[in-house]
Amino acid sequence: MKFRRNPRFTASLLIFMMNIFVSRTLTCHWTEYLFGDACCPMCPIGTRVKTDCEEDKSTSCQPCTEGTFINKMNGLKKCFPCRECGAGSGLKMKTSCTIRSDTVCEPLEGFYCSDSRKDDCFEAKKHRRCEPGEYISQRGTSSTDTVCSTCSDGTFSDGTFTSCQNHKQCESEGLLLLRAGTETEDAQCGGLLLHWTGLIVCVVVVVLLVLVLVLTAWCYREKIKSFLNRIKNL
Image (cartoon, rainbow, N blue to C red; front, top):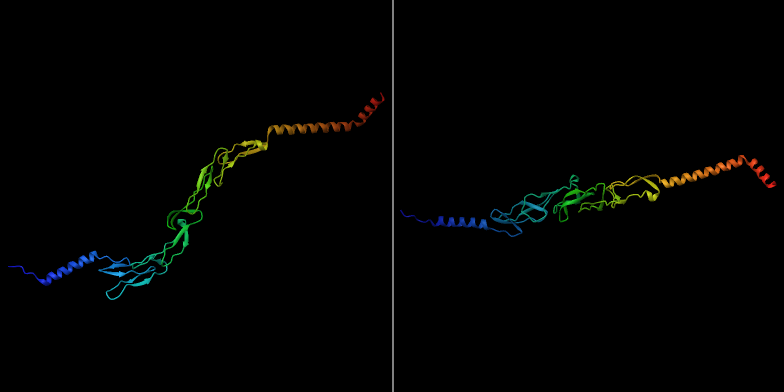
């Protein structure tokens, strides 16, 4: 028995194979999207696909609803939800969301952006706090962290200074050094120096002696006056 070719079957098979090949290799224009075996026109920015195109009609588009957006031409059925800038993440809103663009965030005061993309911030961290014994050598900004440096010998800082302060020189102020300064605290002074104390004591003693002499002379003024007269008569 001989096998007879069926022309209709062969033609159908060829058409089927061609459809498969075409559908697998179909490349749409950059302004179109693939839907089944057809290239449909994309929806413009700020809109989404309501219904896909058909043989006799184009794509039907619908604007995004409030709180959603699409920032490029698309063939999507849903818009993207707008991002929120939560205070818990150290962010605040810089630019509000529209149907054509997402929310833009920026760091809160006292924070800096640790993950940025173009002009948008996705993660923020709190500025570093300098420790006692360190000073703020560079204040933090919205894009950089605080830079701290260690105080040198003879200076101190509680961590909030923009430069380390020199320790008090108690002796130059005529005071006693009660406690030496450290990198975190100033020197403590109090009382007068010993040589000043001795000088003051001497002055007080001299004043007292003068007062004693004056009082003695006052008490014995008659006798002294009589004694002086006798000397004159000699």
